Length: 430
Image 1 (tube, rainbow, N blue to C red):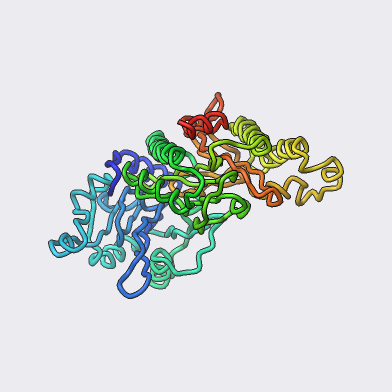
Image 2 (image 1 turned 135 degrees about the horizontal axis):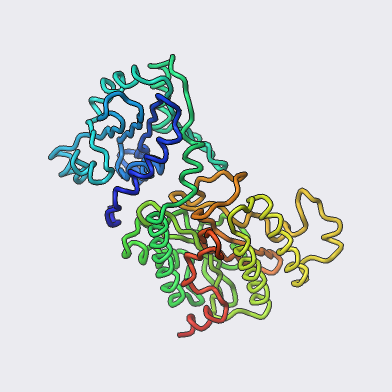
């Protein structure tokens, strides 16, 4: 891995939190992701399932975690099953976790090789009443393939049909949404790498560069700072491309007078950052561009101040809509009749700002979190309002990542990334 080792106390604590929420005499299983094939012998780079990483720190394929707090054998209260490493694998693929290294990484003492799993699982399944399966219940989930976790669950339920079944995901949704201090430090590191990429790009952009060249500048800076790369597919959208919310082609020439909307973020140690900045290709905003930019910035700043303990996500978005409506009226994009006659299910401001303002962030860019639960300290949210004006050929979105605090304003993890329009113009001209 490119990232520095993480103290295994984080994973020990995470497992203890999960175990405390389990039913009596129950067992939970967590699987690594597959390595996904492309064609012939080609594969996508491995990405670990965030749940097993959160609970163990294990970051390799073909790994299984077992948590069984009430197991009569102390050594089977926590178990890791790993692919057995050997000299041949070390030569062709690189060194895999040894049992000793797995203990250092996870704090789990009992490690078996995968070939022993069915025998050990039979023993422990005879000692429990309930089995926790790990399904994907994220509100944005749209998975159309069978995962390694799915295959394991199917096998387990067929092999042991008499056991009661419970779900891990509701527990993890709440646990993962509230970050430990070590996790916040890792997210901050991802944000700091993103900052370096953005400042590099400010020095690079000029009329005639292509969107993909800008993407290349980011990835260069990210990887040289120990990131695997982008936390999500980057959006480098110049001119009217910014009005396509999920524009990812990144293949157009950036023209003088246009703006570039850049929604990019580095990952670090599997933790995400999520930044959006909008900059002028020529290094200077027009008056109209700056007026719209400052309107978006005001909404972002006021929305950020609302992210406090007790806030309900849905109510928050209603209030942000009111802020945006006021700004759109001031810009002449809406008039009072538009607002008076609006459809409450799709308010007038949605013509220019059609997406949400905030989502949970952490190990996943759109991270775990129950949206109907009140916000709590140490939750991390994005704040990302935007105004999109196809008829004027540009769109502006601004986005930072913030941590909800106990009694003070949210902590902005991207406070050092330039966002004021005058500062951006100044940096682009140095």
